[in-house]
Length: 324
Image (cartoon, rainbow, N blue to C red; front, side):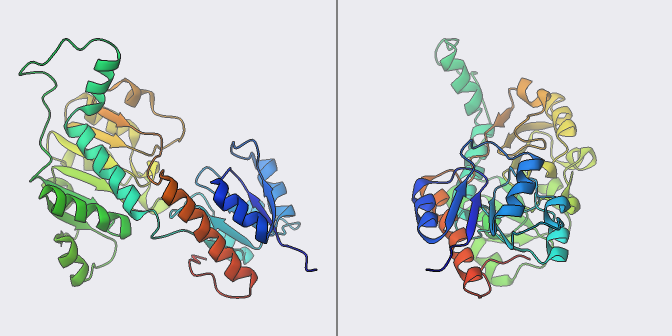
């Protein structure tokens, strides 16, 4: 009987996925379900043929360049992989895969949720009711802003950005502006009713709502900084379901405090899970604990997508979602 390849899960995954992996592989699980420290991650790379990682894992050159490394493939549970040192993986010959497509709709749903919560002050209202402070309806109470008919700027027009644009335009009649690193084909623009702008600055100046769907990493770190926040319309809203490091959180706190922005809705944070203290103090900041893909259907589909890539790799084929 052939020896099974050893696969290590750095966090707990949905049971249906863990069971399926256990049938095919010698499955090892981080039962504590807390991020592995550097030593434990190093050990994982020296004892497993595949490491199945998540956004909470920092995979450094030390793991990838170890002379004792056994791992041949990193199956990333998510689309973004800025937490993995891609250059080191490439140099070491370690394959990296991700899970596109399956979480696009759920993440777009969260982006729309954050837009509605920020402009309609839903977080403030919910806290008021729960605290027993609500005294009843009155004409001037928690007056917010409309979403319908406003202009939405989408930065990063991949699958998630496109799904958000469709919801915004067809569901709320919003005008959609898009900025992307590369040209967006005319068919996609037509399907999403979007207009592509050449620069981030143009988009910020024209948008009532800005939603971020660009990848993380060195190139996009603090893409939204104090200078660019100053370009946004007074009272505009900023939404982030991409990566926390895309926004300079200190600059965002200043823009929210001084009334430059009407609000911000964040599902990701620069030092996640630590949240900037200033954001925690602000009523016009809606803060969610990284819920973008958090539906049972999506989290299971993500895990099964990782397994599909593993199966292809260990069968000597090119994984369908290989990024390195």
